[in-house]
Amino acid sequence: MLSLTAFLFPSCPDLLLEEMTCEGQTLFLTVRSSKQAVACSVCEHIAVKVHSRYTRSLADLSLMEYAVVLRVQVRRFFCSNPACVRQTFAEPFADLAVAHARRTSRQASRLSAIAKELGGRPAARESENVQMPVSRHTLLRLLRRCPVPEAPTPRVLGVDDWSIRKGQTYGTLLVDLERHRIVEVLPDREAQTLQAWLTVHPGVEIISRDRAGTYAQGASKGAPTAIHTNLHSHMPDRYEGSK
Ligand SMILES: [Zn+2]
Image (cartoon, rainbow, N blue to C red; front, side, top):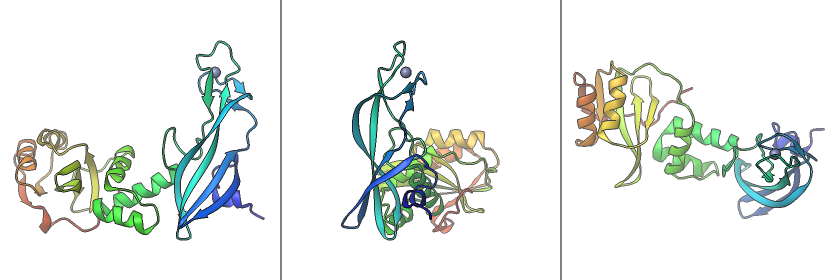
């Protein structure tokens, strides 16, 4: 029979589930590594002597209407190599999450997919519906981290800002309005950034945008021959994922 740990963490064969507790609508799963020895992150010498332990919290995929938080018991090891620059190092949980992340890789990837599919506010709402609530700011950061696959330059481009609330903007979404997919996430909403993107992506014929000021300036300089239209007559409620 499949063990519970193997069922919950199919891609983490070295993980052990120690404890499961429930507080409100959140399940807390305490996990640790079953490995006796770990290779040093710098010199790769095998280390067995534990220096200290601490708990790392990782938000994970929700389970049966419950939010899930992993409490990962992390060991810090002494490096056994006297010549190594690292005296101690924390064991990595590479199968579970990238270094310093606050969520598991599988949660990050699910949230990125939701952000790509739905865009700003609807994506943040959906993240709450599926018990993995995150802000639009976090969704934008996740999107920026995941590479946008090469897509053909759109003929009809939607330019939309991504804001948490009025007056606070964190980026610009460029959407192919014919294919209904995000082609790029720009890190700000400056005219120069949009202009630079348009300059290296010639071929945009129609630019559909909001906000007369900044985007108009960037759009006319970057794509002087393109026709400009009002964004809200074109922008779909949902963006199709890039993959
Ligand atoms: Zn070392």
